[in-house]
Length: 333
Image (cartoon, rainbow, N blue to C red; front, side):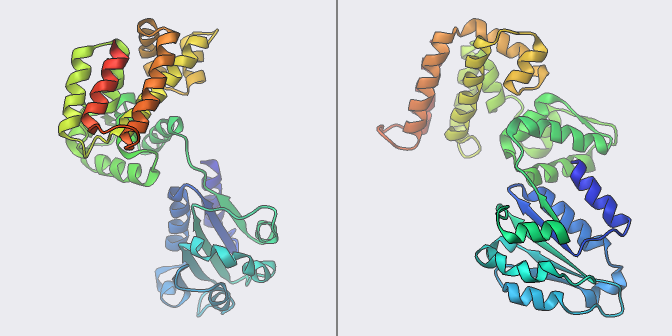
């Protein structure tokens, strides 16, 4: 994100704000900025007396203000980082009086995760003027693949589309978890490597042949034998293949297929853009559209909703395995 690069560049140029309020649904970027401040504003010799980490559950706004008003000891600045600051949300507006006139020799950092300040209230306006507010927004699933590619490209690695999708399927959109797994792979693989599904399977433990991505592909192709092999594997490894995730991903696929049928422009580029998918996977939708007319797709979406309800124990006394087998039979026949 360009905004993060700008914040880091400003800090490196010693254009340092007295308050950094880092907030939002995606904790990864909040941690990235906070960690950079923690490691880089003060020299190691200055940190002992002038750098302090507080936790929102253990302190009050008044405690933070009191600490922030102190002067640094034998240093130009002191740094105070408030982690889990969202625990102070009930009284966060009490920070207004300090934010109106912050101590210039203090760098006060708030890690306000999973929440945001109300832009209509005074605190947001005051910090915007005296310091910096950064909102870290959650990425949509179809944005995470691009994020993975950008991160790896910056470190001189590449990744195949299938491998990226396997990571997202297994780890969701949690950028911190994905980043940890990418770091493990980069330790193992030499610079310039192209990460593929085999690397994911061998080093992260996700099967390259028996996963929801392969199930979706088999269903799209109407490959009954392969689809049944995959769901049998799921039944034997149910802990790593929860039914709710499988239903959700199939529902996404058939919902996209429903929209595909309605597209006027079916060029690969337009389809990828309209459905929010990587162009690499577009051919699968053309094949699936031939196998599933729009009337059948509409019925399948209804089957998926019924299976979702059953998987949550409503209106049926079936095992997860039986629900999945029944669902697959209805889709493929």
